[in-house]
Image (cartoon, rainbow, N blue to C red; front, top):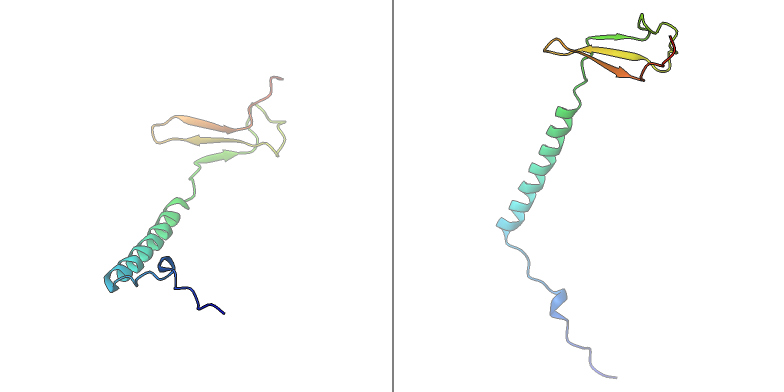
Length: 88
């Protein structure tokens, strides 16, 4: 029987220094904190000033497709929702 082959040096890498490991842990903690902070910042609800399911112009509109009007800071009104039908 032949002797065991010598170990491959690619599989025996040196242990990183203490400072490198500490920096990796601190960087990982920072990324976790940043992810939590950005997630909380994006969860703020959109404030709709006025929402009405049935506008006066389209009073027979089904409730499944509401028309939402929103008054913006500069006074303009933004209409969201399904576009009105062509029938009067």
